[in-house]
Amino acid sequence: MTTPLWRTKPVSSAADSQTGLRRVLGPWQLVALGIGVTIGAGLFSLTGVAAGQNAGPAVTLSFVIAAVACGFAGLCYGELAGMIPSGGSAYSYAYASMGELIAWMIGWDLVLEYTVGAATVASSWSGYLASLLGGWGLPIDPRLLAPPLTPVTLSDGTITTAWFNLPAACALWIVTALLMRGVSESAKVNTAVVIIKLAVVAIVIVVCAPHVHMANYHPFIPENTGTFGSFGFSGVMRAAGMAFFAYLGFDIVSTAAQDSRNPARNIPIGIIGSLLICSVVYVIFSLVLTGVVNYRLMANDPSPVATAIDTAHLPWVASLVKLGITSGYVSVLFGMLLGQARIFLVMSHDGLLPPLFARLNTRTRTPWTSHLLFAVLTSLLAALVPIGVLGNMTSIGTLLAFIIVCASVPVLRRTQPEAPRQFRVPGGSVIPVLGILSCGAVMVSLDRLTWIRLVVWLVIGLAVYFAYGIRNSRLCRDQS
Image (cartoon, rainbow, N blue to C red; front, side, top):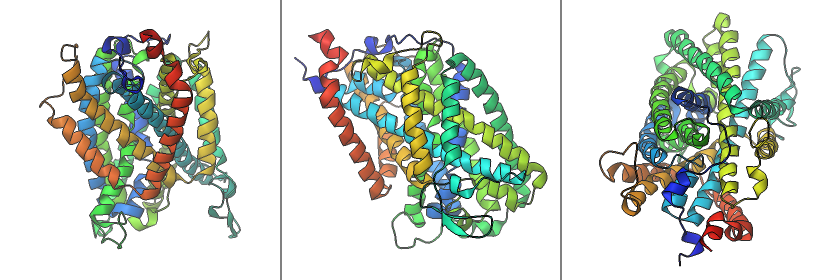
């Protein structure tokens, strides 16, 4: 008999898992979901921080490195999503290939990834909102715009410490309320916001390009300060680790399989399509941004695009762009909060979490208990934790998920060779192996504290699994 820790879920069972969600999303809505989360999750928030603290102008190279590694992972996601069109993303893929314990760990990791990611984006959104309202003569008290103990300067020049980030917490509750109304309605809003966001990106590139100063690109790769990850090539790699946060969107597409009308076909389209579009946008945008604003000025800037617009002295476009970005963040939070709830829903349906999290609202067919739980958790993180810490935590969770997904492809090809695949990664095992190596290389470049936080989170997850999941697993009950 299979050891409980390594029991695998049949591919057919994983693919046919029914959660009661309404299947309303088509391929273009899934592409919009991926773009909506990806363009904004890093582009508008962590680009400046990664340039100012780690890579300098070479942050563009960091995005290229991250894009290549994500491309390997994206192809693997495409094969698995067509084979196992389940809303559990990497969790479901691991359950079918590597067993229940690994599936639990990656599911628990995805919860961290989406929770911290949503908090990061909300924190950045707060900075853009303050910049927008400040331009309209409606300043927000700086003490309500940053985590506790963060130094802030009041309007009279007094330096004090912040209380908490109030707008960030409010944004998360507003998007949660939108999601609880239903996926179909929310997806329409998301698609409209994505169109606005892409228009904003185009405007920023066009109007800022003439204001690029070549001196800002020198040195392109600043000399290392003597500390690993602080400029030099190690800084480029560490920034690439942070950039993985920016490519979170295509991973979230795979969590919406149970909301898709034809997941075996539509999920690979959504994943690969959104990844290709966003990779090009990131490289061009980061090159323009670091050309307009010297990287040294962006080390602790949560809203670098607003800074670039102000630096270029373009008041006529500043309000328009800041308004577009501020509204555009809705689609990022929408995707992340959707992904959180869908992971908990599938894990609960499999018996690894209490049935409370699989309970759907009778009218909207949404997992309202999960939405409320994550609204509380993410709003507390956004209000109380610095954006740099949140960004690194999201990146390491994303990298771990990508490694598991890449490893699942050759495992399932060996154990389930006859299973139907709508899409197959070319080149045998070459691309999955390259995905594992490239994601692993970026992962080890992250700082020690980020690793410690990940280990602590996974240890907590193991405690929950052995206290509840291993005894209540639906697969265990079916096999007994």
